[in-house]
Length: 521
Image (cartoon, rainbow, N blue to C red):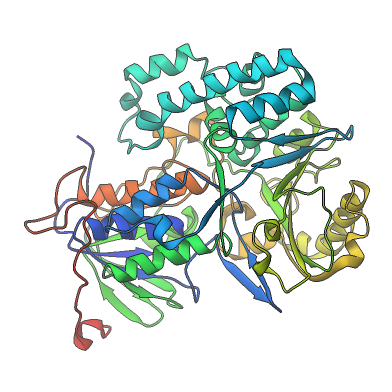
């Protein structure tokens, strides 16, 4: 049986109102717990935050939403619905890929549309290979989801299931790049189905083929955009949690945890003390461990994913050939990954993700204006330039990035910028992200599944971790799952908390709290 938090767990404090914390809060509320959420910022979102500048509404975190049913599970826990609160727009195409040779490919998540596009782009043989690749991705997803992703691990022996044999038979323990190449030979197509490994922190040539499940999410299951921006998702989750009785407290940073033996008894914030029976910690691992007073010992230090520079640009013009999401591939490939993960140098020939959210929702910018987010992967601060060095590098890197975009068809972009904000590894580090990366611990084999930092921490009986540093990992879908899995550690799998607890999917009555109860002790 999966381990759960022992003893009383009636009142749970969730530290952090990001996606994982809000997902945990909703699942806990659905199981009848009283929930208090404390957040250092003035609004929900965490990494999925919002920056408002002169009429521009800028998403500061993820720009791609896949697997929305995982978000809907959290809403359903309190009898609510994602689609009742968020207007989701399916993106067609999901991506537009542009290559150094001038060719372009629209990435469709529909099978027939994508097969036709691949045939136009690379011929009938590659189109047939794509259909086989798609079938393999679907089987890979089915083999992994129930046993390896949406699961709390207490031991590596939990891997020993029939699904492990299925995963092995599918070639999941081979190398990603080689496995993709067994279906499609065109090197450009191979990039489209393997670049996602970068966000897992492992070059495609070294990544396990099992990580192609990320490509399944991106290229098969569908890509969506919430009207109002990605920040609309955490905002809606916070509203649903409040409606279900959660006490949400913003601008209330946590300073320490009070303990009695191996149990956390209270969360102390800048505004007072909140007694609790259990706590869910969603900050990045070093911050969470610092609050707990110790970090679990590992035989090898954690290895972190590459970071990213993100240039948010509000412009007075746009370029019609851009999609909502455009991947601009440089000519270099293996060298790029070596620079990001081995030598620690800035990309000499970058591959860039360009997001233009005003393609789908013009209201995110003033009339006649446009938003462009340019994400350029870069080494983390443990491998490449440190946070202090980025202070000197940032202005020149911005200019070189704009010049590179100009060469790739965004002609005149430097003069078109009316409003800008550039985020570097120094900024991520200042936010508490280890090694200056928002992508947390890399998904090497030794840091995946049961080998990833556990969400239960030895030495503390009633604290559970959630977020991208713990189970199951990095990305919006997996972070939402981490909140669900953290809640399950407290509530138990499929069992009510106590007589009269709300059934999963039922909306609990709001908790009435007196002024005396709300007053810090």
